[in-house]
Length: 390
Image 1 (cartoon, helix red, strand yellow):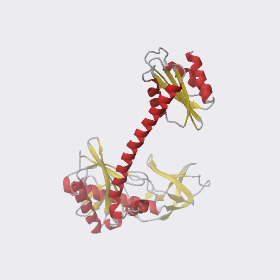
Image 2: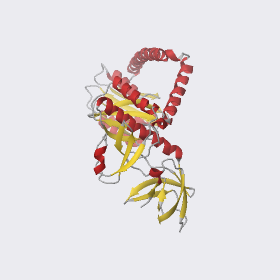
Image 3: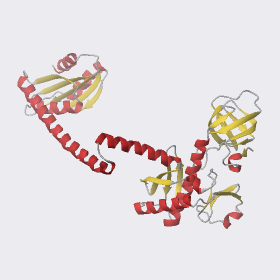
Image 4: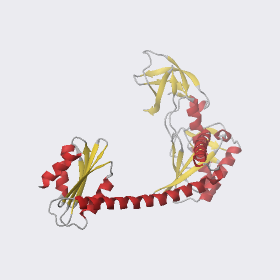
C-alpha cells in the first residue's frame, strides 16, 4: 500500500519515493503527497521527475499517478513536487465547505446532501426547497466568525465502535479506515479530503448565489484566494462601467436603468420605422409589378424582414405570388409567399430551388423560405423559381 503523505503531512510539497509499479501511462509509488480524486475534491497536479502529472486516481486499491510521458524504463526512485497553489486552494475550499455546511445545520437544521469543488466556485446542495436572503446572511456571518476564531482543524482515525463518541454532522457508511475532520465544538465529519491546519487559513467565505434544483437548493460560494480573484474581476468590470458611462460608482445602477429604458424606447421606434419602410417597399413593388408575379432582389436582409415584406406584398391581391431573394455575404436567402386564390404550393417551390444552392429550409403551402450558398446569382435563383411555377 502507498503511504499517504497528504494525510500525514498535509502541507508537504516535495517528496521522494520508490517506484513499486511502472506502466506506460502511470506509476505507483511507495509513498505520495499527490491527493487522488475523491470525496468531491479534485486530484493534485505537479511533477514526478520533472514529468507532468495529469491525473491521480485510486484504481483497484492503487494510487495511480498518470503521466504526460512515460518515465524512463527501470526507474526505481523519483522526486515528486505537487502544484501547491492548486492543492492549497482545494484545501481552503474543502474546509470552507465543512464550515458552511455546519453553519447551515447549526442555525437552521439544513443538511448538505452533496458537494462539488469546481474550478472557479464551489457548490453544496441543501435538503430544503427554499432559503431566504436573511438566512444566507446569518449563515455567512457565522461561517466567517468560525474562520476568524482560527480554530484548529484536527484529523483523527477512529474505529466504527468509536464513532458513537462523536456527534457527526452526517452519518458515514464506512466500517473501517474512518477519518474524522474535526473543528472543535463546531463540526465533526467523516472526510477523506485535505484541509488546512486551522480555520483562519480558509481566510473567508462568500456566498455568491442560490439556485433551485428540483426539491433542493444549490448554494454557490467561494473561499480564500478565490474571493480576491472574484473581487478583482468584479472591480475591473465596475471600473470599466464607470469609465464607459462617465458615472460615479454610487450612481451606476441608476445610469444603467436609464440606458435600458432609453434602449427600449429606441427599439420600439426602430421597429415602427422598419415596419413603415417595409410597407412603403411593398407598395412600391406592387405598383411596379407587371402581373401577379412579384419578385425582388435585395441585399443583406434578415429572413424575418423578407417574410414580413412578402406578406405585405400579397396582401389585398388574392392571385399574387411574391418571391424575394436577399444576397448576404456568401449566402442567398429566399422567401416565397402566395395569396389565397393561388393553388401552387410554396413549400414545393422552395423544395425545388434549394438544392441548386445546397440549401435548407421549410415552411408551408402559403409561405416557405430557405437559405444556401451563393452558387447561383440572385437573378438565376429567381428565374429557377419562376420557371418551376410556369
